[in-house]
Image (cartoon, rainbow, N blue to C red; front, side):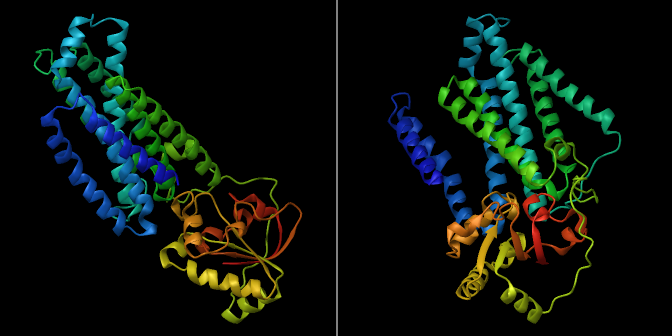
Length: 401
């Protein structure tokens, strides 16, 4: 319903723009010439994308939102109205200094969000290596890169909104934009593919803050409020996702973890499961499930890729017909996107009341736990399901991978 309300809101906004007295007759054809082609492309892509490709689609949306804010900031530098407005006020006044900061931040955050989102999408789609790539000497070049962005931004701001000035402000503006693109690329490449869902969420927040800066540039309160909602919710979601992965957000964004063999933090007080894994045949699995009274299924990315949610639904119906208590435990980042598993299970008509985030009450005994995930993740039974402590600490008779 949230998406439907969002679409209705945009339709009302578009209608309001077209009905505005500030849109001249020549603005109508320009509006449709600019808005229709990307709108048709987005609709076409949305119909073709698979559910497993939804994180990539979300990342692309984030990236182009950041690009729009960056292009707006660059366009204002050429806007003669902005130049006259700045000349009417004192360039060194607090108001104009803040305006310069806002439009420069909008460009930097927008470019970093766009380039970072493109790299993250390529990693999620498997088009480029998912391993972290950190050029040597990061402690040297990273401060220099950030310092270059700040220095060129200050010079561009001192020149004011004047693309024809001889202060070199325009050149510095484009240098700042290029350095921001380099930082966005290196920032995302330094993070492994396993952490890309969190990075996508962080970049989603970045697109929101870029929208806030764009709202300040245009004196548009609605853009400021909407961007702040997106930015704040993106940060909160990033913290939730990092916590669900038993990681800190700082360690994720620092890079160099991902696929390099690092491990999640362990709870020193957690019980150690020293049992040896046993290879189950299909008959063994059936017997274990038929002997069980309570079964929890933990779906993951494998179910999404194989589109096995309908088969899982049939299994659920069969077990419930034999009087078994069947529930689903949903990890917050299962399927690389929060809510991904819930959507797939709802698509297969699995009852919503048995799809839970924490289906094991404290102290309850559970006979069987089905984990549809990569066996490699659970090869170390001492840290089994470290990010789902309810399962780790529960009295579970058997775990089936």
